[in-house]
Image (cartoon, rainbow, N blue to C red; front, side, top):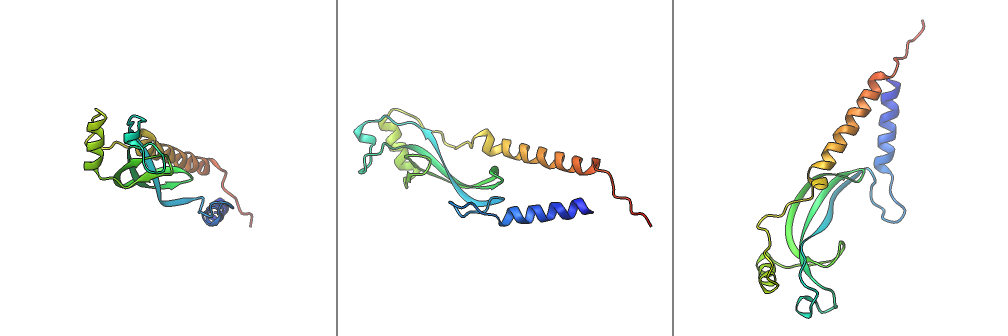
Length: 145
């Protein structure tokens, strides 16, 4: 029982802790946005925005993670990919037009990377199993009367 109460305290403290720079919770991240490049357009003036950034086809989606391990992905939308932190709001139709001009075909469905789709769930499950096995192997406290 003592191990359980210590575990609850540690989890509670981690859930409330925050980074000094980002001021976001460490334990859970709900709705963190991820931007992934789908297709690489040529780096020519036709595929450059007004600020001078080259635009590629991308997808942005929200992600729930625990200790930076992705557990769930949702709200996928097509976008113009500039970098991991920057994108343009472009529709699938506009991206298809750009892809046709670049002689590239875009996939009809976006596939999330293996790590984001399955790898995070496998690692989280393995960590939970290892934790419970560790708890099971700990000696029980015997109270003397």
